[in-house]
Length: 224
Image 1 (tube, rainbow, N blue to C red):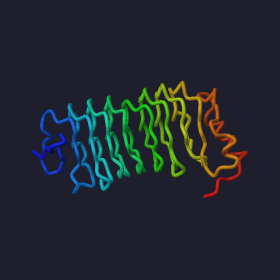
Image 2 (tube, rainbow, N blue to C red):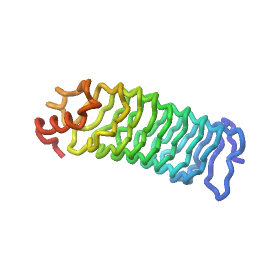
Image 3 (cartoon, helix red, strand yellow):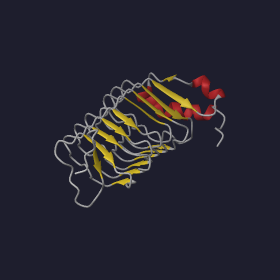
Image 4 (cartoon, rainbow, N blue to C red):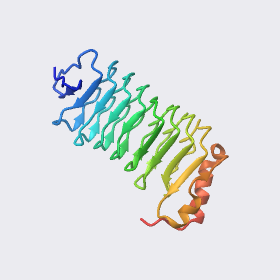
């Protein structure tokens, strides 16, 4: 059992490794770059996770249904695979500044209140499904695609920041059930984009797709 003086258990990823009962804080060993699929699936006691910056991938269902998990620090992670943190009902704080790909259902049912993912490129279907405490989401200019139902029934979501790109909003069910969404901030090359920042879409749930289509028709093409 690799328990440090600061109360952290060090996860080594050895075959057959079993997390001791009652462990609340986990640190990923420096030799690990991929957290294996289902590694902590259903663990009832983990509250904090610390990853060093060489951890690049969180495997499928790695922390599925860890009901006590509150804080995740993964500063170097680029890929979070499907259902990785699904049903982590206490998860409120995620550090993920280099995250690029958010898999299907990755944060489904979490307690996140806001999230800032400047490096994200792909947001998978149902990625934030029923995150009903989520109020604010911010993506950077690298974002390429938000997929079906990514924010389905995020009932507290009020504001989202996305880049102004063709094809960004491809379906009208991405924000289905987000009845409080009022502001879509469009970021890009500055200039004309600044004139439509904090765009208020009072009737978003009826014609969000049409509004984005209209905006794309009247604005000059965004430089590549």
